[in-house]
Length: 571
Image 1: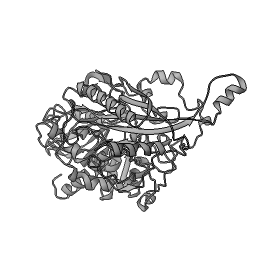
Image 2: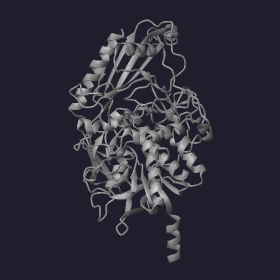
Image 3: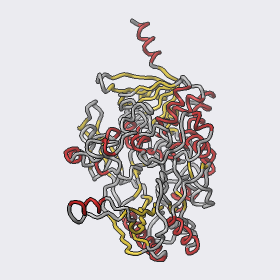
Image 4: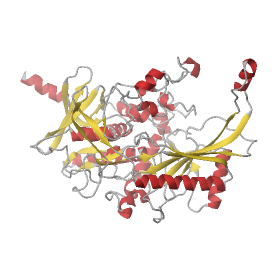
């Protein structure tokens, strides 16, 4: 029996374990296997294989039983995830349903999740901007959060590394607050978007409208073809999974690449209960999981562990990884684990009508979504009564002038009208929220999930800084729209709960000082150096750019360090 046990432990021992298979987990697996390590990837959800498991990707609207709209009973049973724009009949199978994975909302929080191989990389909006020096300097300059332990120059080469492999469309715009990258051709702006771009350039110093940068293969390079991916078909139904691999996802890109190496083992249906800490060695020795099918507990072992479970679940796993050495969670000597959670504020919008441009209409679809206005507030100096700033989406569109009046033939004719209506423009705010100790997550004292893991209790909210920023966005965009001659300008704000942005970050933040942070400059736990956290949990602050590209770059950088240090015997 002793030999059998030894053999069993050997079979469950790998060079590295990656917890999670989303955007950052996929990158961890790719980079580790590229370097020759035998890797186990743990995923709590089911397996989803590229192309094979995209059941709706080639369906026409009329082929859906409910024409794409979920029945009211399903919507009412899932009030949280139903608020997500992509939760419809065509993609509902990639979303976690509210009652299947409960959590505690001490304060309202819309936790949108995708539990399957590939995670939310199948569902993301694919916006990919580099963070700038202003973002990494921000906390030190403005006095919020703690100072990042890295600067833009530390991560810039790794942005290039991941951009070349993932495929990012964009223009080299030469904007300091939004550094250029290794771009494929950008998707062009339409006539009204281009008009607004020129208007802003002429009339506003340090404000820009650019083509949104997006993880779509506008013109594949050989490295993308080698991945088995093809040019984006501009179908804009990406949330169903793309059989062409036209947009970047773990399923289409990093995971099949890692599998091709022969070094990756994927174990779906594996809820991570905790990370095992070896008191004698002073290191983590493995991961304890609960098989969701058998409900049995199993352990897997490795000398390197990457935690990429998505920000809040990464917090949960570390909080639940208790030992004699770490009674308050793995690596939590500082007491900051679970604290300083932040997100992006998307709760303000503005729309308007545009006269003229009647000789133009939109033709085809733009998977990048149109334009993007980089942050222009408090960049070079503090100029408002709130900290940090916001970026803005911007798009213009023109639809047919449908009518719902009349009966019979008149009604049908109104619906089928091919007469164009006016151009309309729209924008939404993407504001940086300030990491605060009062925004935190913790384990519930008594409630557990179906696998015996404590539920996560989320206590995250807006603050006065967010309200001031939102007010400024409305004022500035209204002024810019008015200046451009747009009519019938309609600003709006809502009170959507935090979380619907799906950009939750923090709780396991990086920092220079182990007394005030969890991770060092290599995304390595200060107090348990063979555990790395490179997903959103590691963010010290949130910038106002989309974060996914930064997760990818940090992951590739951390893997390079981990493997290098491992060879030296330091990990």
